[in-house]
Length: 374
Image (cartoon, rainbow, N blue to C red; front, side, top):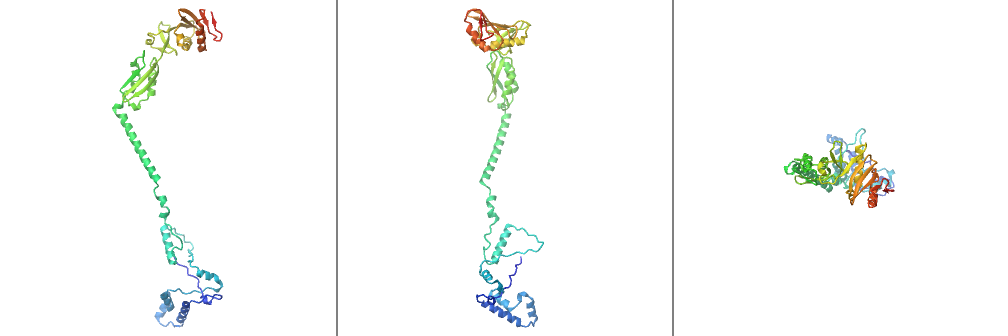
C-alpha cells in the first residue's frame, strides 16, 4: 500500500514569526541543491542520472549518507500549530485511500496483527497502536473443553453402559429355565378343590417369572365357584403362591326341580360341598312372586343379622320382597319376627334382639321406631 507523501514545508528560518533557528543541515542541503542547478547536463551519464529519480543529485547522496530527511517548507500561515505538530513525538495516523469501485478485503486475525506490527515498526514507534490480541488468546477459554462438559460426557456414557447391562441381564433372566414357573401352591381352601385352582393358574406354567402378571392370575382364580378373593405371590425362583378366601354358605333354597342350592349372603350359588357340616338356614319362596327378587331380599336380611342372632334363626320365608318373615329358636322357645322389607335391616336387628327376651311369640319390626310384640 503506497504511502501518501507529506506536504512540502519551508525551512523554519524563512517562516515569519518563528523563533526556532534554522537547521545547519538544512543550509548545507540548500547549498548542495543550488550547486547542482548550476552544473550543465553535458554527458549521457549526467542525463541518465537526471532521468533516474534515485540518482537525482549529489545532495540526495549526501542525505542518504548522512541519514537525514530533506526539509520541507511549511507555510507561514499555519504558525504555531505546525510547531506543535513537529514537536509531537507520536506518529501521524495514516489515511488509507481506496480507489473507487475497489471492495475492502477481509483479512484474518493473523494478517491484521502482522500488518499492525509492520506499520508500527515503519513509523519507528513500536507498540504505538496498542497491544495486538491474538484470536487464540482471546477465545481460548471458549474453545477449551469445560470440566462440566467432560463430566456430562462421562455421565452419558455410564448411563448408556448401565442400560445395556440391564437389558442383557433381563434377556438372560427371561430365557434361562431356572426362572420359569414350575408349580402352583394353593392355600386357604376348605370345600374348594385345590386342583381346580391349579387348573385356573396353569396358563402361567413354563413362563418366565418376570413376565407373570399377578393380577391376571387372580382374575382367573376368582372365577372358580366358591372363591371370593384370591391373592397371587411369586415365590422365587419358580413357584406361584395362591391364597384364596372362600365364600361362606348361609342358606339353602329348594328349586322347582326338587334340588337344593347352597347360597352365600350375596346369592351366589356354591358347590354342594360347601353345605357339608354347616347349619344352613332353609329359605322358602311362597306365593307367586319373582323367585330371584324374593331370594335377594331374604339374603339381604340374613346378611344384616349379627352372628349370634343368625345362629338362632331356623328358617326364613317370603311371598314378596316386602314380606319377609323369620323363625327363631331362643332357648327352646320358638318365635316369629315379622321383618317386612330389607330396608333399615341393621336397626331392625338391634330392636329384635332386644325384644327376644320379652314375653310374646311374635315381634313386628316392620317399623323399627315403633315395634310391636304380640
